Structure formats: C-alpha cells, structure tokens
Image (cartoon, rainbow, N blue to C red):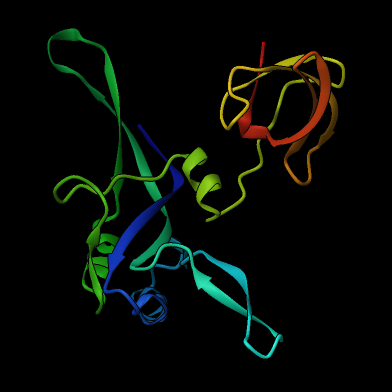
Amino acid sequence: MSQTETKWYVVHTYSGYENKVKEDLEKAVENAGLSDIILEVKYPTEETIEILPTGKRKTTLRKVFPGYVMVKMMVDVVEKERPEGQGKSIELVMNPRAWYVIRNTRGVTGFVGPGSKPVPLSDEEVTAMGVERIPIILNIEVGETVRVISGPLENFLGKVEKLDAERQKVKLSVSMFGRDTPVELDFIQVQKL
C-alpha cells in the first residue's frame, strides 16, 4: 500500500534562465494536466538595498540560488521489503510524467541528486533555504531550559522567555560570562532537554 506526500526538489537550470524555466514549466504543467501533481515552482529571492553614488537607495530582488529552481510535487511513498528479512524500506517514487515534463522543459539541465535519481529537500533544508516556511511545532513552554543546537551559541543552554509561533522564533536568556543575555533564535535552532 502506498500513500502520497509533498516534497520539494531542486532543478538545475542555465544561469539567468530561472524565470523563463519557471514560466515554461508552469505552462507545461497546465498543458499536461499535472497541476494536481506539480504544485508549485519557484526560485527564492531576497530584497537587497543598493546605495547609489547619488545617495539614493535602490531596492532590487536578487536570486538567492542562481541557476536553480525549486519544484514542489506530490510523490508516492512506497514501502518495500528488504532482501533476506532485513525489514522494510521506504522509497519516494516520482510520477514518471511529472519527471518527463520537468526534465524536458527548455533550460532545465537536470535534477539535483546523484546520477539520475532526484533527491528531495528535507523540511529543515526547505526552511533554511527560504523556499517555504514549514511551521515547526516546538514542544516547550516559557520557563523551560533548552539547548541551542546550531549557530554561534551552539551547545549553550538557555531559559525560554518568550515563544512566537507566527514568526517561528524563541527568545532565550543565555548565561554568558556570568551574565544573562537575551537572544532570539529560530525554532529549528533549539532543542528541548
């Protein structure tokens, strides 16, 4: 028995053709009737402010990962029996029509992954790359002590002062050099003890 779930995949494109690939891929998905399988196509951008020689500020959108487009699609989760009774393994199976449409879109050079096997992004990678904000449910409360698991304060312990579920931020009081210092971190940077 198989079930489906959504996963993000990274597609390599010719640099500078990200927007064209996105548009062509969205048209191809619509024409092939795959909009229920290929759900979203995007390339992450960030707003940058450039100060011109005249002193004026110019705001532009910059591609975070030039040469790459992210594709969110439905994949089948198939449970397979391992040889010689070693248990079961789970395999993600991409729709062959969806794979064909993406792979044969003008400007696409292939999926990111070893050989011809596309590898989906983990939820942590999706959030860290700014592709999509996946809500993280943190099973902690104000007043609890947590461990910082990434960033410059890695392995420090901190007391939870405030939780902001909407922004996915936690405010901690971390003891540094004998003084309590307030810090704000992402949910993915802390772990319950």
